[in-house]
Length: 105
Picture (cartoon, rainbow, N blue to C red):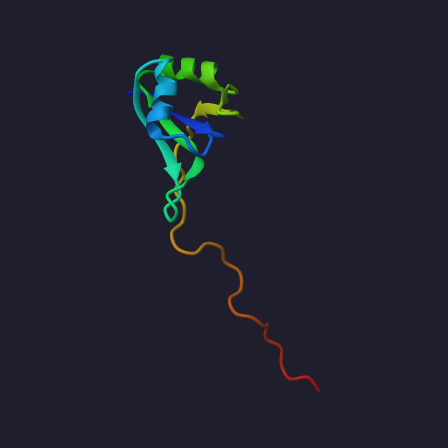
């Protein structure tokens, strides 16, 4: 199995196929997915790329981290495992507005 990479600071106009072409110089790209906003469909400025082998992934990190793409220096590193996020509204704290307190005389 290959290695999944995080790619940050992407120009907002970059497509999946353009990203795949950039990484193909370092080996076989299994997938390249620019992350987009659900509501607008616009790029969020980062992506995930999966390379076929660990060696190819390391070559891509060394070759592309800090390199310029359309005027922006890329951030390329190993993707961290996805963390489970709590569902629903987070937080805690008090509900409602004003605190208790009795009658004032």
